[in-house]
Amino acid sequence: MRRCGQHRREAIMKHQFEQLRLDSVCRSFVNTEGQSVAALQGLDLNIRRGEFIALLGPSGCGKSTALNCIAGLQPLTDGGIWLDDERIDGLPPEKRGFGMVFQNYALFPHMSVLDNVGFGLKMRGIPKAETVKRAREALQLVQLVGHEKKLPGQLSGGQQQRVAIARAIVIEPPLILMDEPLSNLDAKLRIEMRAEILRIHTQLDRATIYVTHDQDEALSMADRIVVMKEGVVQQVATPKEVYGRPKNLHVARFMGYRNVLPFTLEGVQGEGATVESNGVRLVGVAMDGFDSKRVSVALRPEDMERAAPGTGNAFDATVTTVEYGGRDSLIRVKSAFGELWARVAGEFSEGEGITLRVSTSRTLVYDGEPS
Image 1 (cartoon, rainbow, N blue to C red):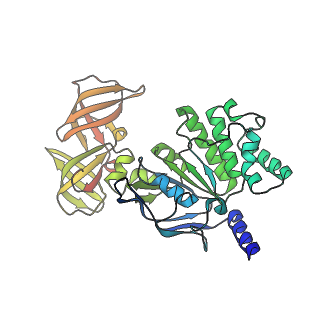
Image 2: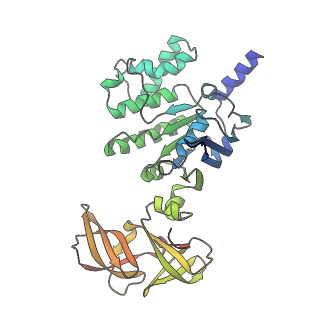
Image 3: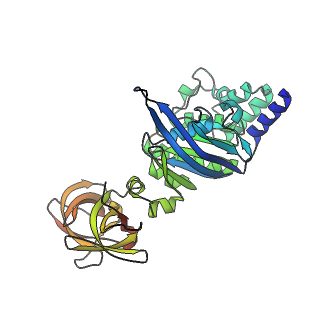
């Protein structure tokens, strides 16, 4: 029986699954006052082999909790996790065989790069010759050939992160989990590592679940984005859908719709909604069914442009604050319907009067007043 169980676990670890299914996954903890607090509530998600999934949201939204539950580092309070037809949430982390890349790299400082990468294979009892061979292949994949004998402290931050990725993939996992792996790198290196992670993901043909609070990372890397708030999934969609058609105001704000202002609904025709506030009339996209005339209009600063007075979907404003940005400026303006931010090409001065326009497709109208 023990031998059969071992074979089953090895099959899970090596299995190139077709679908990972999270079925109403919940995770609660007890706070210092003895109260039960839900960190993750009813997470349902199907992940296909080869997909790159980004869990996106602010600190405390439950994204890392979800990753730790999948990895087996935290037990579920309710629900189940399935790898095809095999339920795995009862297995300890080492029996799931998933590759994990942490935010702080978690490398052994006293071990060489080669030994760090081969550590997981060594713990699995893989012969030394095979361990060295596979570790070298993993280092070649992450483009670190020639660094095998160095210690982690002799490497740059980006190189250390590559070692961490090599260590995660060398065990040939069915699934790779990444918990904000680029947050400790500078801006230039983060962009370079995004491309490297995508290249490795594509080459391996395995699923990747990637936790981030950076919307640019999620948009540029993921096949689908899972936006979370207070342990609850707000939207699961492609980057294009999440960026262009946020499901609610929380998603809109998180995806860069920095201006959310109250308007009055005048009428709806198909997907179009006409709104008005203090004599300013805009036409936008109706994102909800409307229960009242009180609505919120969400606008991105970068979606606005200078326009001639009298242009459709435009409004007059006065510049109150200017932040120089090189090719453009981030300006705060005062309009008839409130204050808002706009990122516009050109130079501006405080007190200057301008006319701004935003396209109908970038003017999103949601039911209810801004919260």
